[in-house]
Length: 339
Ligand SMILES: [Zn+2]
Image (cartoon, rainbow, N blue to C red):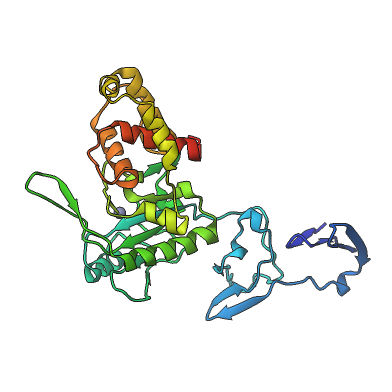
């Protein structure tokens, strides 16, 4: 017995057997109406599809937006073309699916535009998008959003590893940092028009894939021992304030935590094993790749520096001071991120 289940939005269900078909329709109050009909009379409603070259596009949402399914984006449907057969177009997206794209990772290239394009298209690294530093309306795309780009490398956030598999990568043309005479990293500014481009691109992608604020991250967040980009000059607070992009703490909450800390006690306390364990655990809870041990190490300092690039860019020395600790607690209270 052959059974076919078609689902169109949540409105209509067709249940098909070899001998007869039941056709269910829901009215506005979700009452099911059942009609029996013959196979010959069945014309399954089809989603509206348009063609652009070889690519097929759904022209409207025909499934459940709350299920985060592919048809609500304006992405393409890629189908097999087996020789001698056709993949039927009497097709309705399954509710049981979700997006591969669960993270958005931001980078700078540390190269000028021409070199950035060459490296990201001709070598073993790539990104989905490149935002140039020109005051124009153009953004470059190198990799289809449905495919993996090689931008994240060895990486981790919470219990997700190798984030190339699950992310969209955006590279930003920016020179990166230079080391000054005192040995400090001095980072280059981003222009306002470039940040506006980045923000609009991120907003578009995050909205289409329902990427949560907690998954919009810097390369340095997911690879703190290897990477600094996009660095402390990248204005995460502005993106949060002006575009509701990514995570940011509430100032009043942070100041509340800060007011409970005695700076002198903090310095003494911060060197003790129980407090180190507490701090390590808190960074791990937010998502950083850190293993609570009670003993501080170099990798831990690199995690703190990455955190400071993102959330406390006025000072990024890898040292957990009272303000860094207060910001971390405010973020954890707000986002309540599970491990
Ligand atoms: Zn990067």
